[in-house]
Length: 139
Image (cartoon, rainbow, N blue to C red):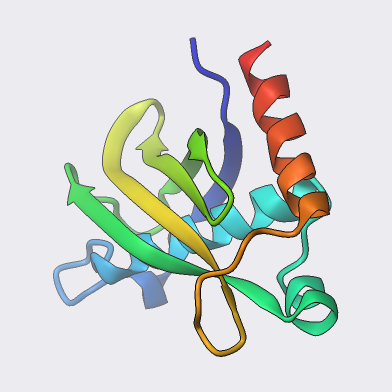
């Protein structure tokens, strides 16, 4: 079984639409928070990347599939899986579940760019942290 990083989310009124279900765009926010916390858990800070290295991660592509509704007060879990790491991008799969029921899936490609938005090779330290984390997940 694949190992993954988990991030819990509780659904608040502000997350829902007039039908009382989670508005689809909020799944993108939940996934972003989960990826950010996954990176933070291994020592990668977005603020540090921008301030010290002049680089940042941006979304190159994202495919969201909404499979079942989430509702007010639900507790969801965002599971983030590594798929592939290259010198300028990171590919992840994310699933959002409620009590092991699949609510949504995302396929995300994150690119490393400089402050002008040009693709740039990932810092060796960040790449090493990601490779180490990835290999620990596989063991």
